[in-house]
Image (cartoon, rainbow, N blue to C red; front, side, top):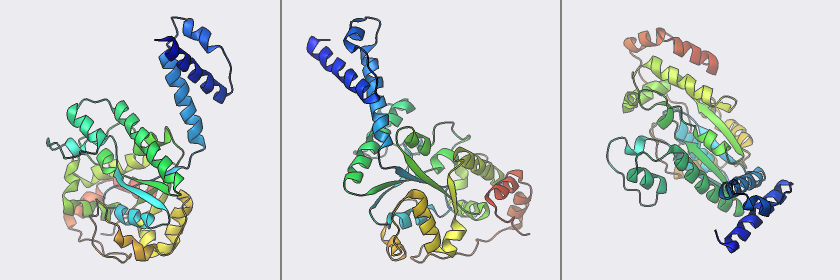
Length: 313
């Protein structure tokens, strides 16, 4: 390390320590061969980033499982004033490479890195994502916009033989940034029946209703403490519920969202089409499925937790 580089490093440490309100002689530390100067600098800069983050505009996140009305919620939030919504986000998702084919993603550094080295550490992927989100949030804040991320929870909770113990999107964001979140839910009977029409229940094993409810419970557990919004309440009174959502996320509310939401085109739009927010009739329920429901302890625990009525029949 040159004297000039050393001087810059020690100045950086002194500036970081001054910001943190402490004092000690960094030049003396630099002369001690036992001190990892580079590591110390990294630690100091990370602490500085944490202090800066405390004064940042929060990053907003919305979380839900598949076929629970998530795209509709996302479109309506995106229609609020000065909102940039990033749709279906999960930096650690295994799905892009799951079929063995490399997707064409020339602008996606995380995807390119995973294609080049499938064993890339999740920690590196997480740090890349946090860096990118920090830059996006900083830019959006400077022009008066609020950043909202819609989680792709399916990748984490409804994929593969077991639910991964990796960090959730919310945990990754909260590690570096202030955060405001909501969790949207739907009656598990309706969401599971909708998933079956797409064949998405086969993404996990065993592909049963009881297993779906068990994973739903794990999803709720990992997001404990986050305000819950019901899809059924939303379609019954869109304006009232959107005001509640905007309050929870600290977003400006506009009643024009019902005229604007259909203009947004997002991936994951698997529901029944239409530009009117309204309740839809339940899909057909067969007796064999009703019997599966009756045998599911996880279902009864889930509807008790979410306060849904058990299915008749």
